[in-house]
Image 1 (cartoon, each protein chain N blue to C red):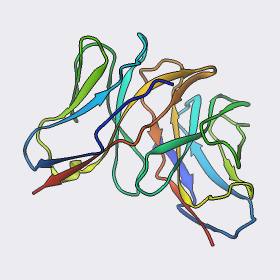
Image 2: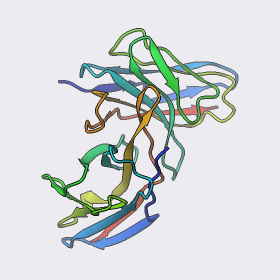
Image 3: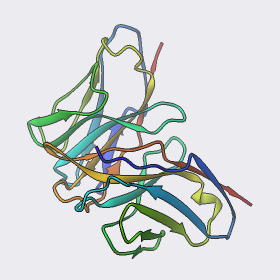
Length: 114
Length: 112
């Protein structure tokens, strides 16, 4: 089955530690996105990538890093520089290019700093 | 970035139609209007999109104003499973292609 998979579903991190969230898609999509969602709030864009080996900062990139070494993978690292990392993280992908293509979302990773 | 404005929340009775409005007065001529919805603790799912003409699919209808500065998502018969946050977004062309920028959305409550 084609789709987009995020892992793990729940993640706990100690303060001061870096942690990497996984996002994999087998839809052959060029574009991939990372969003952060806080309770009762909308989605805020962290990073996005239109092609392999290229990515751009979104609206709240500070304290986060990404890589896009393979088309199907777009991991997000939450670094110790992110002051308030506890949130729900969502990854999405789409064909890219034209604005009439839909985005597909993963089921999210809920990160909690303990 | 092109922005959208939606009401914070709306309420509907089950089996009745629901009209969810969205204002996008700064829309550009080539921006598509997309709608997604998000159930609690899940990722958003695509609902419908359009450019200029009204659109219908199995989930909903999208009515786009003639000047394209507003649109309305129409659920013809609301069910309890339609209770979700509904996001209206524009395909926002950033320097390297299309960003997808979400607003706060509209919380739809459906009463039985």
